[in-house]
Amino acid sequence: MAARTASFGQYFDDCMARAYSWEIWSVAIVFDGGCDLYEFFGYFRINLISFGKQLFEGVLADPDSLGDIALDLAVPRYFSCRSDFGRAPSTVYKRKTGTEFEVKRTHPAQLSGTEVPLERLNELYPKCAGWSGWRYV
Image 1 (cartoon, rainbow, N blue to C red):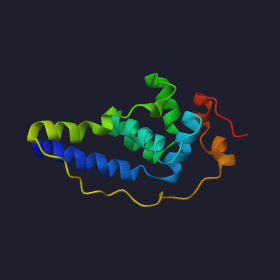
Image 2 (image 1 turned 90 degrees about the vertical axis):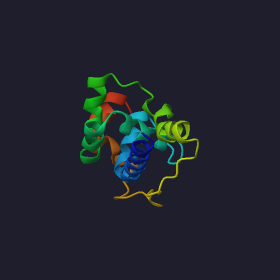
Image 3 (image 1 turned 90 degrees about the horizontal axis):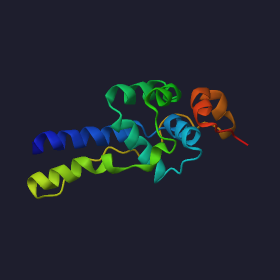
Image 4 (image 1 turned 120 degrees about the vertical axis):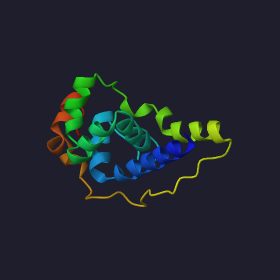
């Protein structure tokens, strides 16, 4: 169990790193009506991962698809406010082994991809903007 938990913890960390991109941050801004890079963007990525591999990979491939998915899943308006899932691997590991979980961090120092100007977010992510009602002003 501890080995599987550690493996999931590493996979989770790798997913967090993969979603650390300008495109996903841009969708988070549109989807949640604003999203600071340090705290709420982390919660946003945690929630993307918590919805499962298919949704996560789909959003990485087509970030605007989150607008359609949100309607199908009846996603709460403030998508990025829950972070419990992000603590699951370390909590379970500590309960099973009595020791702290050590993850080989893969988190990049900078967002990957190309910066997206705020004034283009509605144009680039219309499904998410339509779902959230977000408009750049």
